[in-house]
Structures are given as structure tokens and as C-alpha cells.
Length: 269
Picture 1 (cartoon, rainbow, N blue to C red):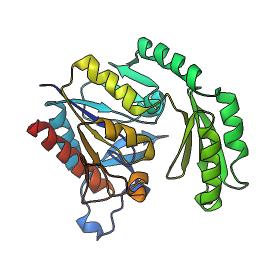
Picture 2: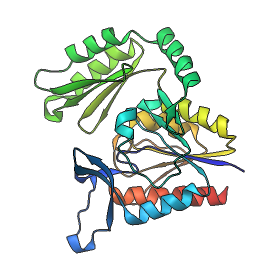
Picture 3: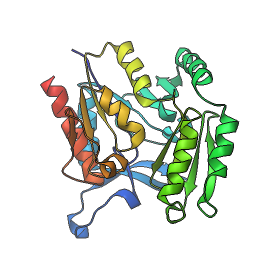
């Protein structure tokens, strides 16, 4: 039996200081380890217990980080995983094997994107044009595949977000708001497609997936066992499924709980 475990990263496995949600007394906070350094300063964290549990899990299953981050952003993350292994970045657009992009996957995906979605410049133009004045703080392209913006949430009312979502959907693009980041991604770029490809490559017979955002929803639906934290887009939407477990904890402690629950699922399998 080969088990595969796919973990979303931000706000599922690793947490910025603002996302820790440590509301109790400081002396009761769990020991934290730095999972990412950016411009010489610590940026993302996980609990020490989560790090230890993740290292143990990696000895029992194929653990695959699955993230919307670009390859460069992903490479800043330090997890206790084997150097030789798999990762999915750029929301499923890139499959890394032993640290390098898989060319066959890239070719297949490019063909699917061209067949099912409007070109990137067209989608980007509508994306930026439909953002209310004052909402856009800065915008980026991710590896010439999709776009995202850092936004002022107070300047982005629900009706404006709904209009933008509908307009991009008509062009074959999916919109997702994660914290202060607003993404627009071609429909063909999906985490579960890339994770299913890795599962087939390693011959996985059971799968576990964890994530917190709307971009993780289909990945959770695909897996045999799904886990999500008690925070994030999916929690706000009340999304669940018969095979999905919601953590008792929120914030960084939910990340620790997710690793433990994933290990228990692998042990049961």
C-alpha cells in the first residue's frame, strides 16, 4: 500500500505571523519553528510539534506540498521532507520532481489552457479593470500563467467581487480571494489534476489532502480523506463533504492538528 498526502501550504501547513491566531496568554503559546525566510526575516512558521510529526509522516507516506505559490516562492519554504520527492506549485501548473519541473506535465497543461481559457492578457485586462478604485495595491503575473493582486479588502465589496468572478468565469478563469490576495487562474490549472498525476506516478492506493481555500476545494473532493482547518475561505463558506474532517483548532494549531490527522488516516489505511 502506497499512501499519498497532499498539503496546501499557506494557512494550512505554514502560517504568517498575522495568521497564527494565538489568542491565549503568551506563556501558553506553542513552540514555533521558522518555515520560511524572506528578505532576511522570518515570514512563515509552524509549530515544533507539527514539524516533528511531518517528518514522521514523510517516512510512512509520499508527502506532496501543493501550493498556489510560484516555484521561486515555494523554494523559500523549508520543510522536513526528503530532498528527492514531489511538489506541486503554481496552483497545479508545475509539478516538481526532485526539485525540477516535469516537462511532460507542462506540455500537457499548456495545451489544455489554450483550449479552455481566454489568453492571459485578455483575462488580466478584465481582472484589473473590474477591481474598484482603491482596492488594488499591487498586481503580479505568476510564471506567465495566471494573475494575482494584493488588495485592500475594505475597498472590495462583495458585489464587485461577484461581478469580477462572473466575468472571468465566462472566459474560463477561476477567481479566489485568499486573505489580501485575489487570484485569477485558468480553469485547466487545478491542484487536484496535478496531485492525481503524482499519485499515478508513485502508484498511490490511498490519498489524503488538506487545504483551506476555494482553490483547494476540488483537491479535497478528489482525495479519499479530506482535512480542512477551522478558518479560511472553505470554513467561511461552510464547505464540507462526508469524507472531510474539520479541525477543532484554528490558526497554526490547526496546522499541527492536520498533520496528526493525516498521519492517523495513513495508519488506518
